Length: 126
Image (tube, rainbow, N blue to C red):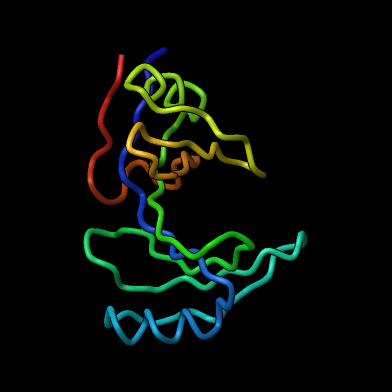
């Protein structure tokens, strides 16, 4: 199925999202938006002003701290299929996105495309 995808940004996974947002905001020269908590208790803080309209966010997690990237797609299932054909594997579906693992062992997520007409043009896949 034809679909489009592109790099959306980077997510900084940590145990304390407030102190991590303060550190990464200062380290990267980005402004930290006020943190927010979703209904399920997940905590996030977006770092604003990243180059190339990339989405950079701090996320509180229960697993070990790491940085992962997000790929946004207008069809996340088709993108997961495409990346599996390249050697990635699906770890699980969480909330609204696929958690994937690259052949190198790096985790990443496939999320829904926010604004296909804003930012770097997405790649078209047949």
